[in-house]
Length: 572
Image (cartoon, rainbow, N blue to C red; front, side):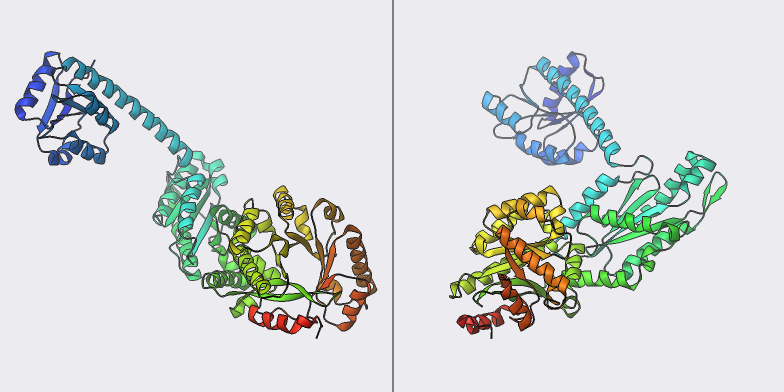
């Protein structure tokens, strides 16, 4: 049965037509309130005058087109059935109307059918409303904290991921504040969980003052909260915001006649210096907090004040590195690798340099660590691979033989599912031959995840050469030399510097060379600086060498000049 006092908005009917429809519906014991409008422009204003439950629309070929009313109805977005009741009806029009979103199309005079359509659609409205309410409740339980109403960790991370994706190509600064409210377990056990909950609610209300679309707040769990603030533009701003949070809790809170002085501890991580995604930033901020609990228990101090000058400088260097990359201040230098049998340059090792003086002073390990912290390691690696392939191909096309290029890859790159694909993409884009590309990695990577091992197998299958860097300075994984398609071992200059002088180092180099020869693997010795070292390596029949004796890493233009001078195959 239809509900009494049904509220119907009649659109496109004259007052006389609307009265007739009202009379027809009244004959079958429907009590209703209606309003008739003839001008489609009035729909929007009239729609909000009352809680209309059904919209019945006229349609005539020449004077009133239902599509005009339907468009406004869709824009309003109310969950109200839209039914056409018209003299002009055929199957084509009915199908077209329903296709566009009309709930039913009924020929005038069929009042009983109209009543059935209204009844059916109102039931559907109730069903849809109940479904939406249930979905809304499930969504709220899944994504919002019941006590504070703040987003939970999952929604917090989703929102920030969306923000960071829009900022990925900028030098935007942001900070994550991981906050822990102190003494909550003591308050719960002494005064009861109800008091603890009220304390959390009052502190949450105070913190919410700072929350907006660019400063998101989440209750992570229990007494742990997190802010993500992308309204900061400097390290000073980051600290000022932490100071405001701490000041906020310093005012006593009255609950049931008792005065509580809350304390909080804060761990801070900074985007992009400490990570490129929210999961990493949250983990670092929480770890920072947990490591400082002995010093910060029941205190209200900003943790960044305690990290010292080293961390502050690291943060500044991270900002410099990111800006340098965005401003094209990176360059690739090339160090010659010489065939010890012929004296010819067989290829180069590509080495990354940054033209910013503070970055260029860093050691390779610190540079890589900084690139990892800023989240730039993958972008830098791909850029360097492309530059080195393009440059080496150009030298080869100029008649300098089939020079190869060696590029170091980090464990971060090697552990990416997409790493092989992006290497393939670069080779296709540059037209560089896979067999002239050599990728080097350290021994420790051999113990890494299955993804890394699979990537190495796939790269080797493409014809790309693989080289283990710094071989002999760590726990040498001899078994992996058989499992993986390794083409060469690079002996670190830590062993080369005392070659011929230190009996232990000389013995290690000799043993590595013998092992490699037995396995059909080439040996490249780094750091060769003297004629004596060169002669000894020739004596034990090492394959290749690099170092200051043959030339330091230089820019592409200078390396071309070196190639021209070395066409004779001499070492001078």
